Length: 224
Image (cartoon, rainbow, N blue to C red; front, side, top):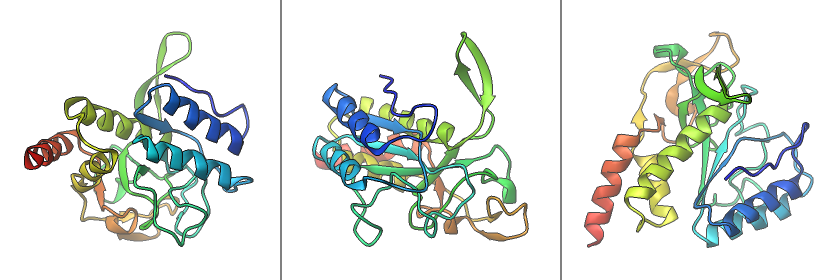
């Protein structure tokens, strides 16, 4: 289902919270959230909605943002932490950075936010052939492309293995990533600074549907 949480400007926290609750109450099991901003007026109301989704076993997949910022240092909302960054993250949240189609040092999208602690994994997010109004298609880029790729993988895995809990589903996605061990350009730095890919996200990896399905199959078999 499509739920509009963002007007023509920045989203309001009450709209984010209401959108999450509406989607959960209407049967959504995976919610893609392609929005974000550097400040929060009412984080408590968003936290309450995220906790509600967590209680109902709903996975939230969030685009990390397109400002080439280290979100371990710079604030980006909504985020996966209750109240502040000193607490444990939600068990039903995935934070997704954008990967380009290039190899080696140029693999991360130049615009993608990143964070060794706050970003969980990367997914394709550059020149993605996508639908646009008017029954047309365009090549679009952004973490708003990478996040729904990840949400789609989550939905695929859950459709085959519906007995998985949301915590188990999240585990499948983060632990089955394809690891990248290369030194890569830090987004926004025009190649001036390079780090190991593991410094951009906590899994050091890229979402992979095949691997996630294999892990889910094993996980379900082990429970029998």
